[in-house]
Image 1 (cartoon, rainbow, N blue to C red):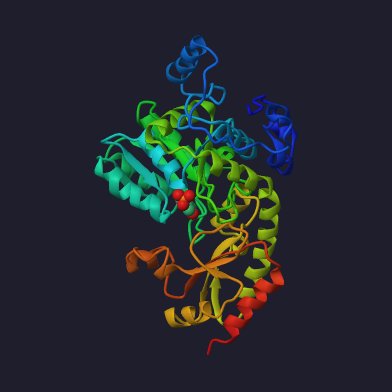
Image 2: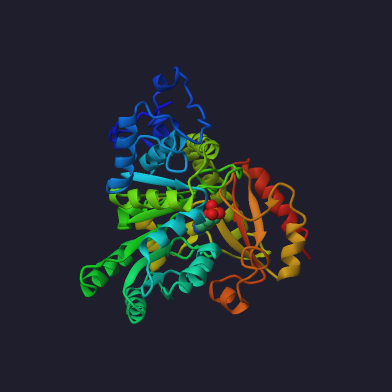
Length: 424
Ligand SMILES: *Cc1c(COP(=O)(O)O)cnc(C)c1O
């Protein structure tokens, strides 16, 4: 199988259409309507001269492009190339690289762009893995992470940039928006302007602006269109969508993605052929699943907001008109997504009693699958976060995070209703 690498302008098609067939030519695989999975670790060269040329292209270019010949599966392989091509089309990006996990993607970005003495600006709260990586091994090589207090407020962003600059040049800005599980919003365009200002002060060295787009996903937020240099997403969540694979992807300009692909080869964190094939299969229904989950979430969120045993719901669709968060949400996102948190009246005892009565919702971490999931944040996803920081980021003993799936909304509401109504 060779993937069809024609660079048709994908904007001629809707995401639903790109998701189903973009980048694959059946004639490249005996007419198979679906791409085969190519389980091979290495690729035979057609001639000695072609072997030399393949290595020259890979190692002497600006960075391996999507059109390089296949050499060895850790460098690139057909299922990976096809997934990357289709994912880039869905993201409206020039190029994309897929990794063994979302964290592998983040690791490659940080290792490619940070060196001892640099500082990093980041939004807060961060996904636990990202926080651990930045404040553990990355801080350990002499890079200083500095948090932005309020990523909607120009003065707060400028103040954090100032503080970070005192530790060394700001090499990278890591933005997670909306944040997990608070649904706090960061203004990507505002932070991109801050990167411009920093570039002037740093003799032209502009910090790389990276957005973790996992929480809403590619179909509801396009960070690259708002000034991000790289958009990363955990394919494990909405794009994979069936809670049966782990993967990650980064999209952006070709000049940015090539070096990440080369570093991925050194780290050994490519996505394997079968998982790439599975992820591509998942992309076909991504728009369909997303629409259904978003519609379900709006119904469930409204039900919870009106329930007497529920104290608050942090659903993006409920952001108050006239607030900065609402203004940025409207400009930056095209939907409220299907993962949010809510607080029930009471504390851990009431939360646990409710959880143990649910029958349709599965109690598990993660999000973005076909099935609805729920978990008690303080004792699961945020278990290792100190209580004072938990409070700061809006997680207390009454906080439950839910990810709404594609089941019938009436069954989801009935399940929550019977569990909540049984509370004293
Ligand atoms: C899950 C997640 C990640 C990490 O992705 P993995 O595929 O689990 O490595 C990163 N950021 C966010 C916001 C996530 O939810």
